[in-house]
Length: 186
Image (cartoon, rainbow, N blue to C red; front, top):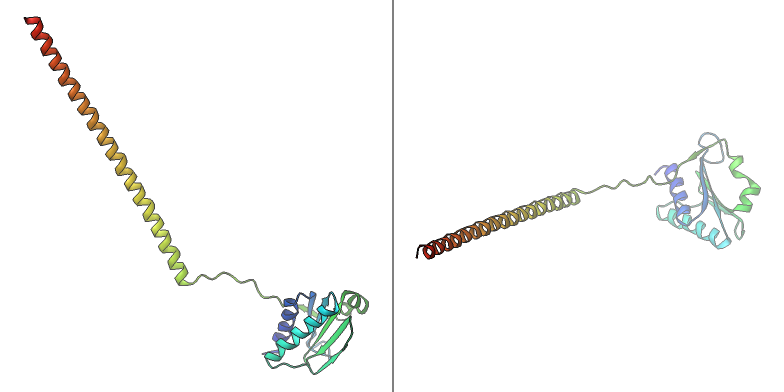
């Protein structure tokens, strides 16, 4: 793992513990002090300790240890030296007073944030979506067919009923006419 990657991880660990106004400054080739400076603002002593512990603990897990530490019990500022980079964790008052951002302004700021993850749909999820879409389309089609059949059946039934009614009305009229004609003939 390169020094830049380790410094970026340290910045992310500070961010995970809600440190504010985190800056990772690249001094590579510009300073004999170190390659990177990490500056993070905290809101209280417990917050300062939490951020420092998180960075130290997580970096130890990947085999990166601090070579020195300063500020021991300070309530406003702690510095950890990891060889290739320094971590400055401080309150806003200390940050304003010591103005490290201005002192190291000749360096360039490094973006430490993770790129926003683009949702990758797996082939399985895509297949499920397609199958669901096909089912939905098939269901809509079958509903339309059933509705069309029902409509056609209803129309056919209605036509038959009209024909039957016409036939029976016509037969009754013929019978009535015959009866009337027979009566008139008598």
